[in-house]
Image (cartoon, rainbow, N blue to C red):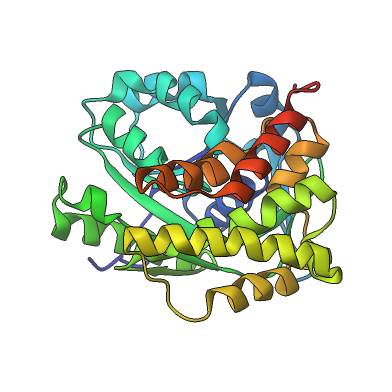
Length: 329
């Protein structure tokens, strides 16, 4: 499917966190019509009041307040019934997935196109069950963004984004139509300045990201350190390796083969994102519920299917959950 020059889409960004604002802001600056969907009316009003300032390679991109279309997700279904969009980019965390599904359940007979940027696994199947006629895609990105002020988002270097449809969902959809749709979105993303490609092996990328997140994120959250400091003490690296080895044992049982030296990839991510605060650490610092259940918890559930033990993952899960129990907002 060739995207004609100047062709516009209506793109709904669900989740106005740093990543959602980065993707939505740059897509809007590139000429797409973007609608931001927030958890609360207050968040939507703040966006419409302040606009968005994106800092990308020392350049500032401004989306003025009167150019912002922001609404709470409780209004999404009514809006879609009157003015449906072309794509939904779902940038909420796994912890908010059930709430989102509950809010859009009246669209269960519609043909939506949703690109999911969540960490962990299991959410695609839940979405497909709730929206059986929709095209549900995986989106794996190494893009990073940090909100430095209320209306300001800084891009943390240029990453890579891969789009694709999981093999577990492909059997229920029209393969040719899926490919045309996802290629069109990838081209729009490229026009907005993102290194975006379509992958026929998106599941490998999903499991690679699950491995990396399952090793790095919970340990940075427990020790309250940026990613790079995991490598500064041999005791930290030893626990990283234990999580890694347990994961590879589960993947072997499942027949999952990752390309390249996966351990070096984990170490490389620590080095490349040395100053980054992981999303799980940010959640702990702000007393929010983390995604440990959908990351390390998923690894435990996969291990149980093969009667395997992953004791380090289990301890990590309980430690993080124990931290969450105190003052979660």
